Image (cartoon, rainbow over all chains, first blue to last red; front, side, top):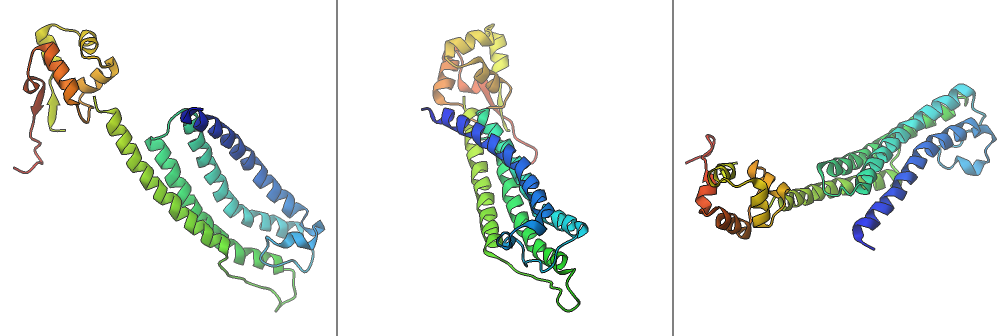
Length: 177
Length: 73
């Protein structure tokens, strides 16, 4: 199979997957916070601290809004990925628009690390707010997830610079008569 | 760009259309347009020699160097 045909068909599939994720991720997040009190303890793993008492509607809404901060960054990254795959689907590979997608993707991964770092203290405050005074927590921490995001963000930014060089070469080749 | 392509002038002098030149040289009309509009970043010797042969001229009749104001002497 021709490489360009392979790129086009794979991009079509990835584009559809990104679109599905853009709808599913916030939906799952909303469902998670809505049914938080009914969930088994094993499902509290993504939270910085397990709630010791049932959380009211207001606190669960706040929790959802806080988790929507990194989720919003993720949605933006997915939208840029969709744009990139749409360009690949059209056969546009070395273009300034592709470079911009890679650059935005790298930056959003770096932002994601920042948003995830911010999420921990906010969530720990919200979850432990119903606790009696003296047992409320304010947690801070950097996990491997944040470090991975920083690493990947840097890597994707580097790829965007390499892609820009490739674009220049392609343009020069196209404009050589 | 300090290199000016005077292909339009030579085409008018020789009374040859762009389409005829593209066919004679063996390049696409789109590439000839890139050349004429000054968007070209480079020209192959083979293309230049084919143009010169068709228009019966030298590279100096087609390409002209124009010094930019900002360029040092």
